[in-house]
Length: 199
Image (cartoon, rainbow, N blue to C red):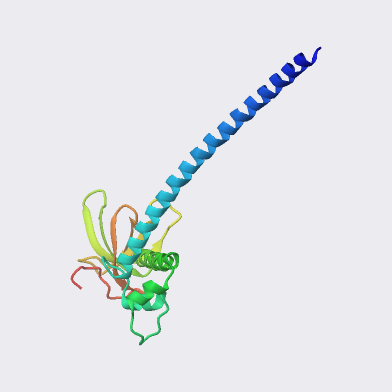
């Protein structure tokens, strides 16, 4: 094999390897471009989500639409009692993420408190409105037992009824029947409790 043929063969091998390298580099560039676009999109979405979070936090902070009270602001932003609440100073001194986190903690605590307030417990007085198979029945009674492990969560209620001196104990479906707490709670059932609406 002469020198010219050797050079031609080597050059063909080098060209093939260069072609493969160029294709690989082009693929990497395309992949990086696509990744950069995805990251840019995610960054924009995160930025907009962050703006929306900050807007919501500011609305809650300024007590718009059932937001924080002044005592809530004192508690969650650790402001001493008796010290004036300076909204500008609080916002100026807070990092944006810390500010939103503080508001989110308040929201979470409010939701937990509401769930606790709505959760029916033994001893709570409730109003009920349900269909007993024959007619619609409405009344008021004291919860004596809750079977949370059963489907439908039966709530056992006791009252004397409207025209009776005898206590009645029956159950209603906590999840399906119209059941609401009245706000009254009894540690023991009063003997004169009759469950009428006009007490």
